Image (cartoon, rainbow, N blue to C red; front, top):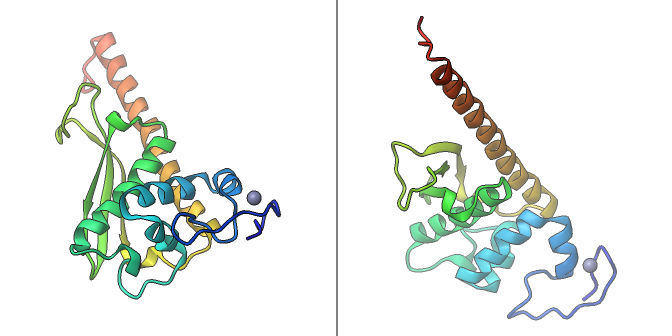
Length: 186
Ligand SMILES: [Zn+2]
């Protein structure tokens, strides 16, 4: 196989290579978020799922290669892979965020990323802050170009970056009020 970007020749192995027309190096350089999600999907669901997940047309809500006994669990798994990648790209470490998914194979799947307080060992709903919230029909994730997928993932990452900025602004405003010992209502 020949890479469509660098022209380099690489070996495509049905059982272990995700891309048919891009070499691993170019895929990681040009589409880092898509590449990271595919790698994570590969880890949990195998190489065929990693290859089909975004670019193939799905007959159901997930590609055949990702359909298991429990579709809902696989939808959760896919959105968790996406959520972890965009959260980490936005600067939230693994122990600083949680991805929560309400799956649907008939309608939109709701999912959100929360920022956890520093010492949290389990999600603490009252203290965690929602930094991303969206709903997507799972089957709409399929049949896109690599460029389109990367753009969508970048959009989600940027939303988290913006949310984190807002969280910081609110925190410093609260701190300023505390420091000045002034009631915000006075
Ligand atoms: Zn290449």
